[in-house]
Image (cartoon, rainbow, N blue to C red; front, side, top):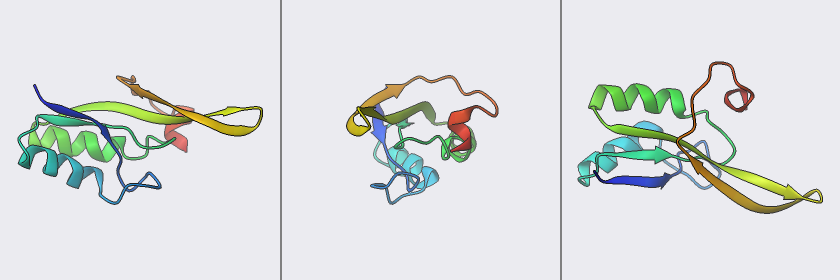
Length: 93
């Protein structure tokens, strides 16, 4: 199985594609799916899940989370395989 484990959609400040376009591009390139790892948000998860199901693609939920140290941005923590929960604080961002 081949999956791109680090994809940002237009919900990230450095992404330009929709979750749908990311999944379609991955499949076109011969991948089985993606991990959607937008910066500090899970806003694209719902759309990505619907598209992945429709296209029979693998989707891994992730997020690149900004960590602050002494009030300043210090580094980013990259996480994948998150469990999706309804109405969690992360989904409201």
